[in-house]
Length: 199
Image (tube, rainbow, N blue to C red; front, top):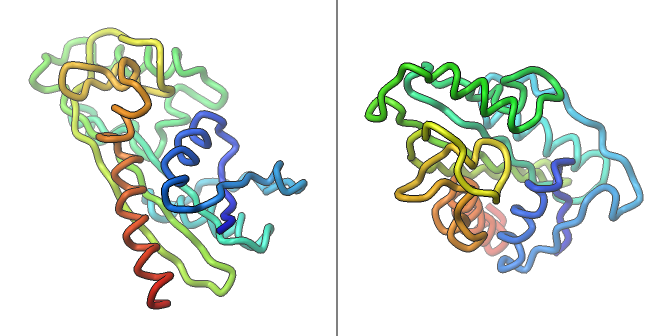
């Protein structure tokens, strides 16, 4: 099965592709197809709405089933921020380091026990016939006081899950516990049921 992945984030694409391979899904990009998918403005008020906006646009423009992920970091001490605005938390075009610096600054006086947070990932798959599937995954953790590890991307170096940050985990370790791993495992069950029954 060939599905288009609706993202231009290379690191997210790598992660999505790695987790989709066991589902017998060939993940392709617009570049693989020789087309350019429109960069959708994320105007939704939920992760579900933003994932749908991206997937429906990619499906319409490619003619293929499209998979999109919308994800973010929700910090309890910041009333759920940065949340939907995780990618733009430090302004458009900000580096991961700048986003992390802003987050740590906002949590400067917050003690460890109050630094609870969760990563959220919502997968949306839109088929050419209009059928839409959703799956949601979360991963609980705490925000560390300084970046740790060289791997991952985004807020991974300060998101502590157990004794390690996401950035200190191997790809296999991260996939086993991450919000995106959880949402894609849920999506695989939903997709398998749909392909079997059409419902």
